[in-house]
Image (cartoon, rainbow, N blue to C red; front, side):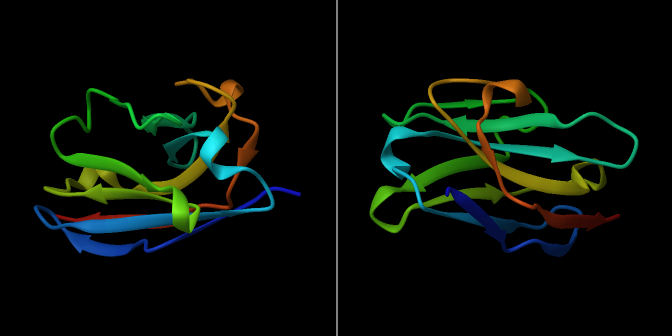
Length: 121
């Protein structure tokens, strides 16, 4: 059974930084494209970033230049470094694993429970 567990969320001020992490167990981490999504109440889950199994990255326009996704295959972990945070980045952040490249939730097979990120102005 594949499990994803996020950590590292919390409260930050606008302009500040946070890093969220996601550890994957029970599967073959190096075979997955790993993505981050975010969601606020009443809204659809929104794509943030993906790092492919080969290390290529792709970002949503709203976070490009501010967020950095990376993976450490030896630790079965994917990271999302968030810099220059804005209040509109406030959301619950979810990591997910895909068999390939995907930027919509339907393309992902496994999901974590999420971690809350709150940015104050």
